[in-house]
Length: 227
Image 1 (tube, rainbow, N blue to C red):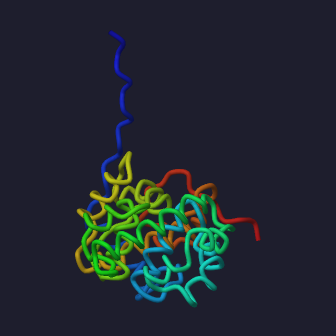
Image 2: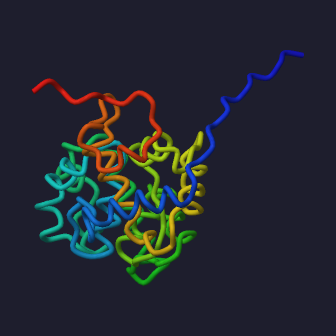
């Protein structure tokens, strides 16, 4: 019988006191962070987050600017139809599948939830095209629940800083929820995603500009560029 491959041992997480210091710094720099996706209500937020999978917020906002000006309910989306929706979002990756999912979830909302976006993880994840990450974003942004939606940025930041080392998004989510002080949880998702998007970049993190650099144990830090 072949030996099983040894799983890479994860480093010990940061002490919770250090994680608290990190969020104290991030919260002072940006006291009221917000999603960069444009939306007008819980329904358009849900649609925008579904469309944002494997796409940039900027690209989604460009595609939905005209769409959301007239289509802001499940009923209006069904009236628009899948063909016209595809045409409006064709600049977004996987637009055919996403258009089908948006039409399907709109019908589900009408049939099962009186046209309203449910404030419940299980009900959200039952909708077409909605996974745990999307559900967490909607619960956090639309319903002000202290959830943690782990995307590639947050996964990277959590592992680099060792706030919540984990091999999977779910492991990182659980680690962050456990490590982050309750007083920071409502906005923690946005602080981490914005930090990963603009400072802790994938290839060359901007460590010389990072406000939490002194607390970060990442060993391959990027030096400041020559003046």
